[in-house]
Amino acid sequence: MHVNLVDQYVRGTSTIHRLDTRVKVTATLLLILSVSLMPAGKWVAFAFLWAITLVLTAAAGIPIGSVLRRSLIALPFALAALTLLVTVPGPPLLELPRVGWTVSEPGLVRFASILLKSWLSVQIAIILAATTHLTDLLWALNSLHVPRLLIAIISFMYRYLFVLAGEGFRMARARQARSAAPAGSQSTGGNLAWRARVTGWMVGQLFLRSYERSERVYQAMAARGYRGQIRRLDPPPLSPRDLMLGALPVTAYAVILAAANWC
Image (cartoon, rainbow, N blue to C red):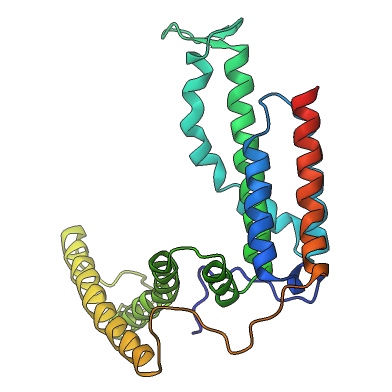
């Protein structure tokens, strides 16, 4: 498929790329759990966690700037914790004019900690997605006994996004080929109501065409032996080297978490 909207896999031959997918998935979940359990306000510990995350990014050969930009998607969701600024009791820092709300110091610390946790967790997940092909990831989830229905939903959602995008691009190309505009003009005529009506018609046609296309895709998969499970003819063995390499960042995160709780 020539449309690439969601596939962020970065080809490479680094050690993290070649690491067993089951180890990468397990290590990613444990790293995110360690970040989530970090006490609020431990800024030095957060700095160490971020440094390890940057080392993993560099070791995987992924552009650090790209990971940082993509991880900003966590910030709007973390704003759901914005109410902590005025609901957590503690020494006041400032008072918001007109509304009479007071921002407390503990509230600010907890909000900033949640922001950092979300940001670091998304960066860890990006490293997994950038170094693991989706097929391998789904196979690893199946090997780790994740519910088969959930794996099937993820698989079809990913594949049908490309089907939907392809149908949309073809419809837009057909509309552009059938539209005419005077020389030097960018407008093809029609008021706002007319454009809204045409857009609604195109959305409806896109749904019907995508639905029919998805049925054909599923029938083709079923004819080729698909039974709702990801299978591999040559599943790779789980080597002690992979276990040791996967345990290194998990151990480092665990040591930082224990030190933060102890101090």
